[in-house]
Length: 246
Image (tube, rainbow, N blue to C red; front, side, top):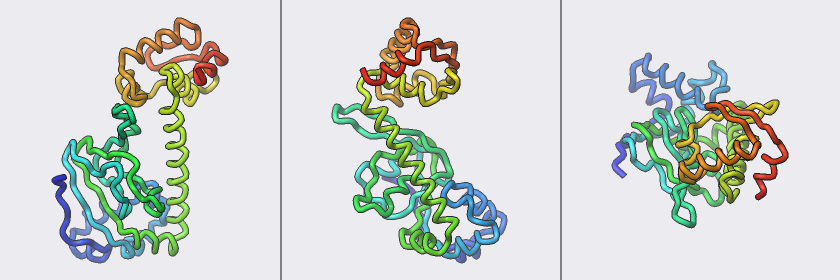
């Protein structure tokens, strides 16, 4: 991995002294857009940074930021750019778990886990900047700042729910079952909108695009759903639910 890494870990005070005040304010604004710390009060943000010890890394498009099994030794925050998280199935198929855009934490739920290893490969989709905050700094802030603690816990709880649903989807064996689950999660008053095209959806399911297109056509022909572009309607809820367990 040929990532460029800063040679000196920074503290908030050192950062304030090292860069122009405008750049510093931009850094603070961007960092506090991150879900785990966005609710820290504005008047507490400078002191919050003073308690952090971190370093930065830069990655080029296509570089691995982390590989499945790497130890999560610090809190990784994707500060700039976007990444994809993927894993290899037992059959050797690459399964796309999700795309993550800055600013967002990476594998934060595993920072304090007994088995604190990345569960997926994380690959840069474009030039990326990663902030790595020391585990000790995060522990200190969790004990000192209740707002940060709440944000950290809420984010990780939401991530656990997302991963649970993702595992459920990947464990569904048929393409129709995967599609039914995807549709039901987006259905309101029998209407739904697909937020991915078929190419992205086939990667998300870990299947080929032709196989996905064929399954969608069969679901339409069977009267389960109606579909026009990205907008659709559930025509037979019972059939759609049954497809999930077939």
